[in-house]
Length: 503
Image (cartoon, rainbow, N blue to C red; front, side, top):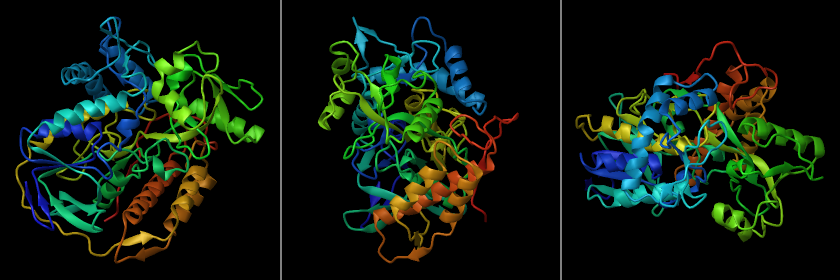
C-alpha cells in the first residue's frame, strides 16, 4: 500500500466496517493490500446495533429448502430465487466459519440454542448474549481481519464520491474530518459496504452514519438502483424524549409482550408481520391522538428481561425506564432498506470494478420484505462472495479526478427528514409522493468552497429521498414494505423498479 500526503494506492478498497465489509476484507487479504474505511469509529455501524439473530438451517429439524421457502414467502413475489438459494445454501458454512473464528453464540448445556422469529417455520435463529448478535459477529470478524498483515483500517474517513476513469470505478474520495480535506484513494476494486439509509427519515433505529451515501454515490457514478422504495419500518422503537430510537426487538413480542394504547387496551395481533403491526400502531396513534403506543413486558417472569434481553433492559434503564415495572412507549421507525445498488450474485454492480454487499446492495435476497434475521447472514455471505470476485480483477492504472465543482442542497436536515417521513413513510399515496418529489427536486443547490461532512451527508440524503419518492410514486400497488393507501392491492405481476442517472 502506497501513501503520500495527498493520496493512497491499495489493491482493494472496502468502504464500511460492518459485517459485510469485514468479511470481505478477510478474504481479500490473501490477495493484496486491503484498506477498510469507516465514516466514524470502527464500531459505529448498523451491524453493531443488530439485536436480532442470524438465521441458518443448522438445527436437526430444519432444512435449507425450508429456509428458502420462508425467505421467498416473506419477499412477497420480488425475491430473486437464485440469490435466495445461494444465501440459504451457504448459511450453515458461514456459521461454522464464525464459530471457528471464535463467535460466542448462545448455548444451553454446550449446544447451540436456535430461536424462532416471525415468518420462520423452524427454530433457526442464533443469538449472542441474548440481544447483541450483531455486536458479537462484528467483534469476531474485526478481530480476525485485524490479525491479518494486509488489512489496514482508517476511521473518520467519510467517502464522498467514487473515482471514475474510462467508465470504471478506480477508487474513491475520502473526506478526512480531522483536517477537513479530501484525498483520493486508488484501488483495482472497490466494495461498497456502507450500510443503510434510515437517517433519511425523521424516525429511525439506524445509527447517525446511515445516510445512504453508498446509494447516492453509486447513482452519481451511473449504477442502477433497484427496489429502493421498499423500506422496512420496525414497529417498536423506543419513543422517549432525550433517548435514541432504540429498537425493541420483535423477539419481545415473540415471547409474549403486548401492544397497548394509552388506555391499556390491546389493539392488534402482536405476531403479525412488521408492516402490518407498524400500520396498526400508526392508525391507533391517529385515532387516539397519543404520541406513541406502549409495549408491555411487565407480566414477564422474574429475570426474563435481565437475562434474555440484557442490552434492551439496561439501555431502557439508563433512560429511566424499568421494563419489569413500566411498559415502554414505542413508535414505528425506519429500520432496513430492502432495495439499493443492484448487484449480481458476486456483488458486482452495473458499473465495472464497483461491488456492493450488505444493506447498501440489492442482491434480490429480500424482495419486497426482509425475513427476520436474514440481514446479518446476507452481509457475511455476499461479503465473502464479492471478495472472491474482486480478486479476479487485474491491476489497473491509478487514475481518476476528484470532482472540482460541487453543489449542496440549501435545506435543513430536519426539513428533509420530515418530508420523507410524512410522504414516503409507512403509508403513501400519489398526492404525498408528488409533493415529496416536487419539493426535493426544487431544493436550491449552493456551491461551497469548504464543505463539511454534514454537507456531504445532506447531499446523499436528498438524493436517496428523491429516489425513494420517485420509485414509490411509480409503483402503483401495495407489496411487502411498500404500502399505497390509494392502491392497497397487489399487482398481478411483480416488477422490479430500476432507477439510473440519465446521461
